[in-house]
Image 1 (tube, rainbow, N blue to C red):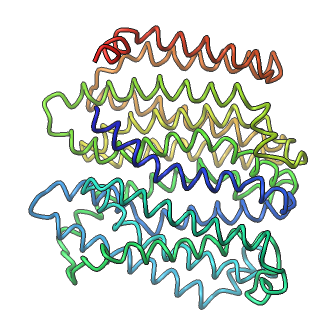
Image 2: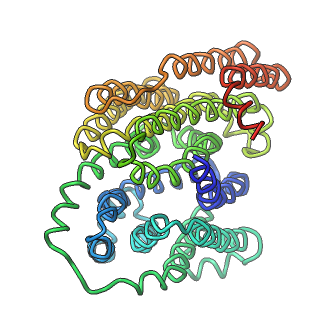
Length: 472
């Protein structure tokens, strides 16, 4: 537990700090980019998230799984890297050759260079997947985090320079005729820097491709890829189709406010970076199930406190991070998306059972149950009722996945979760959030008073654990 916490903190720096830097840049984007142009920004990033899932094919998780077999450790590294290098190269070539038709089909006839830039970003990012996984597997969280942070800093310097210091005439010579293109270009530079910094690990790759191992990995990973695609549907389908189904200004406002809810996503992401290799290393231990249960419970309690803290402080967070008030039309989505991301974090813990028992196909079914709910409700209700449909659908999808994973897990791989305590925690969070945001209109003082009370209840419920740690 102590090692997991330490590694999660370090991985958290690598996972969270870059996103915090980009999150801090959000006011700069919102100040310089109109809501309709921001809809383009949101739409393109939503689409590339789907591309990344397909290109990586679930091989990051497969790498962790098969590297645990001592005789296949090196073969797994080499085979994984060459497979992903091949998929990303093929994708890049197709985008470069068919650039204009793709741009026309996606509604970017005037900006075909956007498609080229995103193809290169996807190519560089896919090349980095296995080297980053290698760092995580070999317990090198400091190197991992350092590279992630440096990538982000370079990206930040470039985008700030483009917005504030480099004359528009110079930017236009590089194809950046609209300000919305600045974040895209800086992302491309950051992705390239990542490949260069990971070269020492990439050079460890040998010209080896183990066919039998590859077939086992594909069999294991394709359900994870399909499940990952389903997760991206839940996460980004709304932002991908809003550009085409509702007013561009509303779509841009939704995308801008959604980024404030990313504070919860950052916490969950940092946790995931440390927990995935930890779960696989624990799978052979005698007390593995008890460990999984304890980790899930502590995550739920602590993450609920984080969620309540964000919801209680929306009144000033929106002023700080969303300075353009034209975006505030979508501010009501934030509490919903925050709780939705908490449900996803719990689901990620509960999904351990199908990963360690190699029942990834069941995980795919669970993920697609949520994805189908997302697709159907957005397509049927979005035009009629607007972007609030997307927020509630996201919460509904993650809640459904969380519940399904728990009941199926108890059937195939029973883990002794204290489910009553976890459920009570979620119910209290929903109630306190409703009172704070709806009944008292996100009042700062009342919200934080409720936050303190909620935190006290959670800590008191785990007083034996807390007192034990204080004594130590």
